[in-house]
Length: 345
Image 1 (tube, helix red, strand yellow):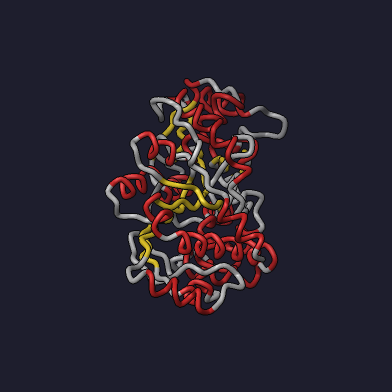
Image 2 (cartoon, helix red, strand yellow):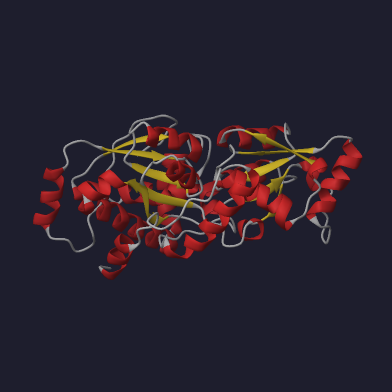
């Protein structure tokens, strides 16, 4: 499976491990149309990629029509227009979705603490050991005469929320020392590489790409430092799909659980598979392998530990104006599919 921006690809989810052949046939016969899946082309999408390559998705008899997006908030628009069944992106925009009456359920995670902050060469030279981040940004402004420009995704996204929480709540950076620039994932990576911004929030494999191409670009803050227990990419499904086809949802979750396990056990085996899907001819397998071993990479399929951090993130989104009000999280998370998948291993 090759993922390219705004592409429609063939793939398919998998039934729970050990499911009977007759059950797989029944599931296949029950869904003629492909599942409409939205993803962001980052390393956290690897479980879906690996599951397809291993053949688990095909065995389930389902197909996927995959569309890639630049950010979670952009994907919410697709959910609102009823053009997606499955959402694979950051959890934070789902609070916005629920506030607009879009009923979705988080059924699995794929990664946590994935958003990190990288400093470009101009900013990194002030980030000496022992210098607090607030002083790094202050020294840059005093030297350059202008605030440091830092890039991230749109307001309401996990990268944006994480960055603002780190700047204002954790590092206590003076707002006059920073200018936040909103742009897409690819644009952020290119802006950091080109020196068009002084830093930004990135996820793997972009972190390994930019630091590999320019060693003067430095990883300045890890995900857990920026937002404690930072929730990351999740798999969510529409309420309509869950009510109509619980077996299909179970198949999706089980494939994610199996893939996360395989990625953790055999990274060398899965690296070429991920490179083929995410590399777009610009990233080699060695870079993907470094990304898999990066401190910015933490795969997990269990959605339960991110429930409280998601609530904390939502409270902060209200504070910064990304949400008008807190939306009750009761009913957003549906862990029973994960629990069944683990029980069936």
